[in-house]
Each structure stands twice: as C-alpha cells, then as structure tokens.
Amino acid sequence: MNPVSLFDLEKMAKQVMPHNSWEFVDAASGDEITKRRNRTAFEDITINPNFLIDVGHRDLSVEVLGEKIAFPIMVAPAGGQRAVHPDGEQATAKAAGSVGTLYTLPTSSGYSIEEVAEVATGPLWFQIYHFNDLVTELLVTRAKAAGYKAICLTIDTPIGSPKERDVRNDMVRRPSHFWGSLRDRPDLAALREVGIPDMADWSPPGYAGLTWDRLGWLKDLTGLPLIIKGVRTVGDAIQAAEYGADAVVVSNHGGRQLDGTRSSIETLPEIASAVGDRLEVFLDSGIRRGLDVLKAIALGARAVLMGRPLFWGLAVNGEAGVRTALDILRVEFDRAMAYCGRTRIADIDRSLVTLPSEL
Image (cartoon, rainbow, N blue to C red; front, side, top):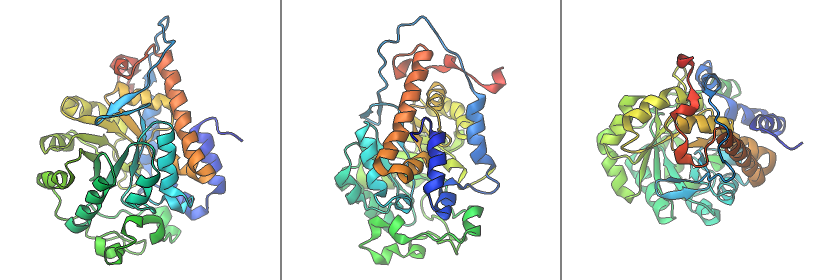
C-alpha cells in the first residue's frame, strides 16, 4: 500500500512499530487534550479560495534565517529516532536534504552532531535543551564547527513531564537511541548528571541557570542565529525579541509536555502580530495536511515544522519513508496554493482563512 495521506502513513507505522515505541511517539501529556486540540483547531479554520487567476507556475520556495528551502515545511527536532529505525537521524537528515528542505537535529539524537552533518545534503539547525553551561557550550560549539546554521533553544520543558502511557508501559530509554553526541563523554552522558530523567525518575530539577537575560551568553557561544522554540504567549515572544532572538517557534511540543494549553495555531496570530516585524515566526504542533501549512502561513508563520510524521515515515521505510511524508505535505500545500490563487509564498495572506470566531 502506498500512503496517500499522512494519516495513511500513520496507520502503516502503527502496524510495524513495537507497542512501546508507538506509544512513546504517539503519546502526549496528561489527558492529551492539547494534542487533540492541535488538530481540531486546524480543522475549524476554513479556507477562502480564489479562482480565474493564472496559477500555471507556482514557486513554493521561502528563505528561513538566510537559507533558501524549496517549500515552507521543515523537519522538527524529535529525539530517539533510532528507536524506530536503525538509520534514525541520519536517514531523516538525508530525506530532508533530498527534497530541498531543512532538518533540525535534536539534542537527544542517537547519532552525533558530526555523524549527521557528514551525511546531510541540506541545511541543518541544532536544537539544544539547556541542562548546564558545560554541556550546552560543548554541544553548540560542536554544532557550529560541523556546519549547522542556527541554534534552536527549546524552552518549554523546565522539568520532566511524564506521558502516562509511557509510565504504564514501563518505557525505558536506551542511551544509544538518544545520546549519540555524548557517546565519547560518559561523564556527561550519565542521564542524571545532565539533568535528564530516565523513566524511573520524573522529578528532576529541570534546567537551571538559563534565563532571558542570559540569551546573549548562549548566542555569543557560536554567533549563529538563535531560535526560541516553545513560545506559547505574546509575553514570551516579546521577551525573545527583546533579548536578541532571531526567530521563535510557536509550539506546544505537540502536547507532549503540558496539557491544557491552547493549540499552536490558536496562539499564532497574536504572536505574529506582536513580534513578526522583529523576528521570524515559525510554527509546529499538529501539522498533518498541506492545508494546515497554508493556514499557518496565512496567520503569520514564515514556515512550519513537521514532528510526529517523521517517525511514521522512518518506521515504514527509513529515509524513503520520511521523504514520502514530506512529499505528501508538499504536494498538498502546492494544491492548496493553486486553489487559493497564489503563486508565491509572499502572496499568502490573512484573507485566505476564516477563523471560527469570524463565522
């Protein structure tokens, strides 16, 4: 069976993934209300098409922090990819590059920063969780030396948050699936020593010592553009802009860390309105259709990031499976642009969508 949509790919992945791995990828925090809301909020936004416009040639390319990508869908940082396929993050990076888009390597990658850079054919960003200054400095400077183009700081996980499905399954993270970049530093790779809980300990101290007024320190370590991921409020977006960030990712972590928040697409318009003229705005959480991409751009995002579906593609067919997931979204987005009478990303505007409150 060839998947027609990401939902087809999801069904195929569930059939081949081990139960605990499937649960780890699929689960969200608490009652998983925010995870569901990420989808329903997208579905509640309607499209306003435009016809009798020449859309014979459509340019899907966009520039993100100075890097041109072929279409406005990037790959989000998501740890533990080797748990679903032995090629893990290397396969995902190759797939992203093969279709002309960007990959964000997670801190918790089974392959090291350098091992992924060696095989990547497209631009790379590096995502960092700050556990302490020593580990952060080590990892981000290695990322710069390996050619990564930006540092993406995830801020929405101040402490560990158990996904109840994982707890019930006694899920255990294998270090070889998560800590490739610390493989040669066993002193730092011991999970508790860097402040990351294993599944038996859900009460870690969380990140310490990194506050808004220290973003300058983090940025100065590499001089690379700094992206703040996990922004959910206008207040935090303004803080990011005022303290020198170059971009924000409006994200609720796919509902995986805190339940009961609004969806990312619901918070996007107000955040984009508040800071969109000061930094670049991206979005993740809930992207499943090309229409979702168009809706996000119409409401203020420059581009979006795809998270869970990369695992579905990996599980089904490795690198080719991730490429399939990206191709599905690209084709759907291209079709949505044509139906809306738009031939360039810059022409996608607020007039193309209607929010539930406007009906």
